[in-house]
Image (cartoon, rainbow, N blue to C red):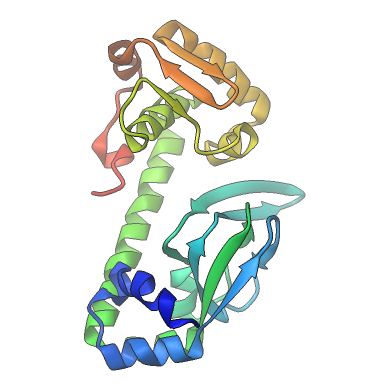
Length: 232
């Protein structure tokens, strides 16, 4: 791995406080690859041989069953996936593919586990990261099970608006077919939900969204930090 990639990786929470000798040991065994769009990086059910770090580009985490497929999450720079499988030495529960040209660092999982046993700060940071991931899964389950499709879309738009700076007009982070999958809908249901939000002042043209009545949309959506705030 080029030394120029070290500072960005070192800034990740799981690597930030670990001993330098252990960080250098991980980097010596790591390497970086460039992948074109739509390349499958890992396949669910396979052994977790590497911890992956997205340095540039975008990666889709997805799962399939009985000829069905669903998007689980989108990974953007700079972040890791799939950490739990690496630490547990267990098969991947999701597959991953690039959505665009991406630069990925790969660290052998056995090296990560060895340093986990040797470096208390690294182990503590990984436990914290896994705890945050667990809480995110709980929030996603609450969003899916407690809200109607219209309410899920409304709250997704409010979260995306906040991530985009809070302006009344912004662009969707996902194309609509993937957004439907993330929200647990069919594309047809998503189209109906978009129309269903028009009375609350939401206009969607392509991937561009305009919220014309913020208060009305928030009264309908009832955003809840215990579901929608992924920092808690």
